[in-house]
Image (cartoon, rainbow, N blue to C red; front, side):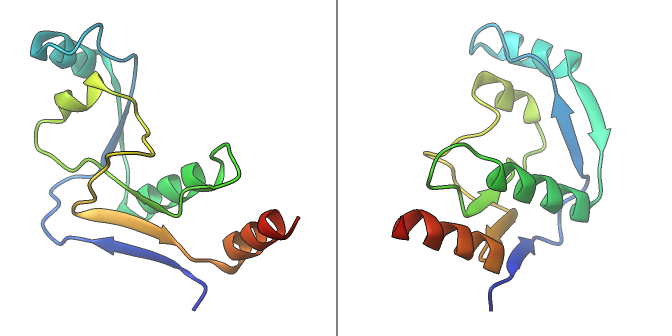
Length: 114
């Protein structure tokens, strides 16, 4: 149908985005410290979907991501041991956004036909 699709579990207890410097190393102490130092933004599910969609659409490269999601976990300190965004080895869980919009498909066709 050429629209963006968002799927979400009904058992997500809070919606927040954290911004900050990555952990100095991959130890739990360093990851916990990075999490403690981060800035917390409380967001709505709609805002979270809009953010993921905007990140996918603004990604560099000819093949933009069409599927994005979130690391939904009670202890998010582990997320500070890696990159904030990944194109490989990502497992979707309780929240994801699929971009099948007409604007995305039109830009893909113009890249592939050029």
